Structures are given as structure tokens and as C-alpha cells.
Length: 81
Picture 1 (cartoon, helix red, strand yellow):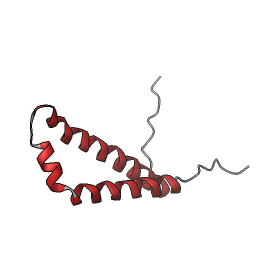
Picture 2 (cartoon, one colour; picture 1 turned 120 degrees about the vertical axis):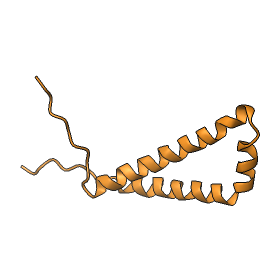
Picture 3 (tube, helix red, strand yellow; picture 1 turned 180 degrees about the horizontal axis):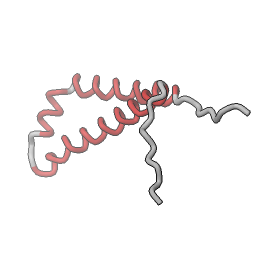
Picture 4 (cartoon, one colour; picture 1 turned 90 degrees about the vertical axis):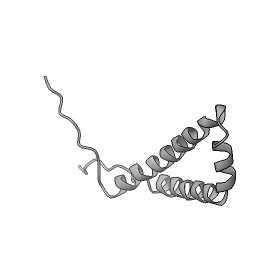
């Protein structure tokens, strides 16, 4: 019998990579607006946190899938009985 073959997430890497690149392009093309909004204070102070969360989520999904394609996985812990 063939060993269990996991499907490699090529589509996920492509989509999240494109989204990540698009986010960086939008951020860099609108630096003035972003700096103005994030510097206002009050509830606007949450914008940098929200922005960082969005970037981390998309980029983290991309890098996780990227390394999965190359076979790099987290070490599985053995259960202690």
C-alpha cells in the first residue's frame, strides 16, 4: 500500500501570497493616509493593532503553507502516559 500522501497546498500559497503582496502595496501606496488615521488617537489607536493582526494572519497562513510544501512540519509531541 502507498504511504499516506497529503495534498500540498499550492493554491493556498498562491492566493495568500498574492493577498500578502497586495496588502503591502496598498499600505505603502497610502502611507500618508495610514499615518494620519493611526496618529489621531482615541479609537483610531486600534487601527495599527488591527492592521498588524491582518498582516500577521495573512502572512502567517502563507508561510505555514509555504513550508508545508517543502516538507517542513512542526515536531509532533509524544503523549506521556
